[in-house]
Image (tube, rainbow, N blue to C red; front, side, top):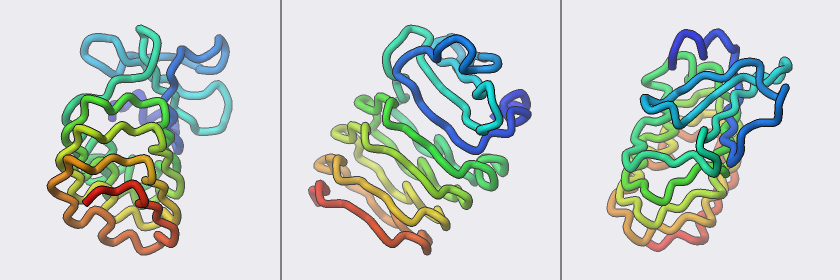
Length: 169
């Protein structure tokens, strides 16, 4: 995470399938090498960082999303991010979700309801050590191609509600 983004005091990440309305975001910056993915903090004190596609539609996730939000890679993410809404993230081309959300020690809310996991083969440690996450709905996950789920929920001590009714193992 860049120093500029850290200065935004972010606690929540929300993916959008459209450009935010004028005045919603303080300032926008490119977060991709080709300037197709933009991000900006909410123009209030909510602590929300919006992420959207400069071309319109959903943000397309790369085929390898391993450690995308991993707290091990970012002390800031580990300690400060409490909520992530990925419902408008296009994951149809993703093959690897290994440790995608692992070690987000402050995460209490995660929306992955829009995930297309039909091509994913690796979910190892995907939610590892999300210590404060109490509820997780993965009912829409298609796990027909997944070959590795080792430690997927390991050390998720607060997890009380886990919906995996769509899993095909």
